[in-house]
Length: 235
Image (tube, rainbow, N blue to C red; front, side, top):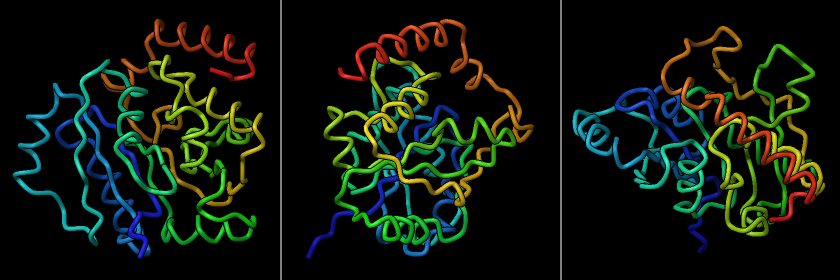
């Protein structure tokens, strides 16, 4: 019997000790069947002690989708964090979650139903473009901010979820353009995984957002994206 998880939810966070809990709980409580998923919560080694202390104090009771902790030790940036979480995962479908994403009810069965309608199995190559509630429809149509990819895509791209030279910003532009270029995208924008981002008035800017959106990170991202476009996203 195959016990491989269908979904690997790879949650990269720097908001320790508590900033990840609401998103995790939403994924756990809105899952139809938590037994088909694994939840990987990844933090930098500098945050390990604070996270473990928080876990010792207890977290809300969910329906069984408990976080498995991954500790990484490279750059303190979201791309390294997500890529490490993905490297620790074993599921057929990899989802790069963050503190500010919240799924709809029955998200797991809804994604599987969408794949079936598209004529795909979980073992095929695909990237899923879901809605995020961005009020700018043109932006919503253009960008995949919540990366959902099949393991065969992850492996074909070289064993990374996001191109590892990025720090944070623009990595999602790269992911989006690469997926559309390769003809991998399945449109499921009717499924809204709400993005509670400060740009939409749904959260306050904090030190984590400021670090991710540093001018240096943006400059690096824009330079890399142009180089990657010129190479047609070949490594």
